[in-house]
Length: 254
Image (cartoon, rainbow, N blue to C red; front, side):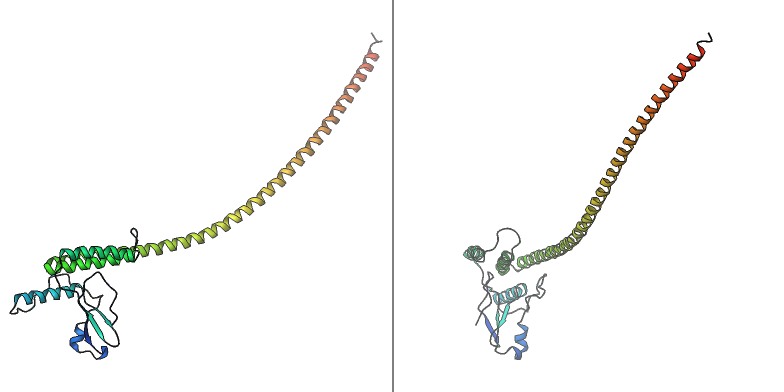
């Protein structure tokens, strides 16, 4: 027989329910409890009264324990084995041993001390189930209240996990969009740089043309100024000659 993985939750010895899983009796099938079934969150109705009060209380406690912590089942060679949680009351040494086992398993399975760690979460969940079992044996109402606390914690963790997964998916979408946008921006930057180089080339050509035009106009202006000065000097000389001739003509008449 290959029992399930060892757990911090205390179980009784496994019991063989049937030798053929396909030919189980209705009574044997009724013992099967799915691990995913909805557990009770309210008070369990008491069973019919029996002659022995202690037997009645023990039976009610076992029913509550089986409802809170369903038995685990496995098959081997067409044989169905069922293992229910233990209904044996715990002592102080059991609690100390549970703490030691928790620390040992955390170390053996190399659970991370901080951050998200499925191994640490699983072990602490088993430890909490064992504490619920121990409390339920002494006080069923307290055990049911702890059950509500456990279910609320699990529901909260599931909500946070869903939120985390949706956040990761949203982050991945944004990252992909950013990568796509990055490639588009890189292409646009490359196009703008090419356009900038083309405009710089055109600017340099226009500057060269402007410099050539300024140089050519400066030379033309110098030539024209020189020509103008020469004409001005020629006119001045001509004016002086004409003035001298006019004075020579007018002087004898005096």
